[in-house]
Image: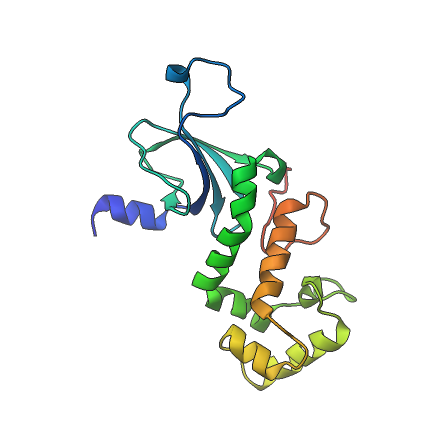
Length: 192
C-alpha cells in the first residue's frame, strides 16, 4: 500500500451525490473562471459537503472519495440539505441505501447496542414504526444472542419488517430535518 493509498484509507470518506463540471448554474462568471463542484455525503457521520475540485479531478456520481488529503479537492465546506442541488437531493436516498447495504454490520450493531436516551425514551424508539412493544421484543431477542444480519432481525422479531429500510428512513430524516431533538446517525456539531 502506497503512502497515498494509506492516507486516503484513513481519511474521511464520502460518496459523490452530484458533480457539476461547469460549476453552479447561477454563477454569472465566464465559464473559464468557474471551478467544477461535487456534492458528497460523508459515510461515517452523514454530513453533507460541497467541494471545489481542481482541474485534474476525475470524479463522477457514486464515486467514493477522500475528503482529507485529496489533491483533487481544493476546498471542502459542510452544507445543509436545503443547499444541495436537485440532482444531489434525488441521489441521496440511493447513496444512503448503498452505505447501509455495504456496512450492514454497523447498522445491525445499532440494533444490538442501542441504549436508553432518557428514562422514557430508548434509541430504538427513534426508528420509524418502532413502539414500546416492538422495542421490548428487540431487547428480549438481543439478550438471547446478538443479531447477525438484517435478515436475522426480521426472522427473530415478529412485526419488524425491513429493518434495513427503517434505518435508511431514520438516516434520511436526520439529514433532512434541522430541528430534531435526538440524533443517532447524522450527528450535528454542538456549535451549530
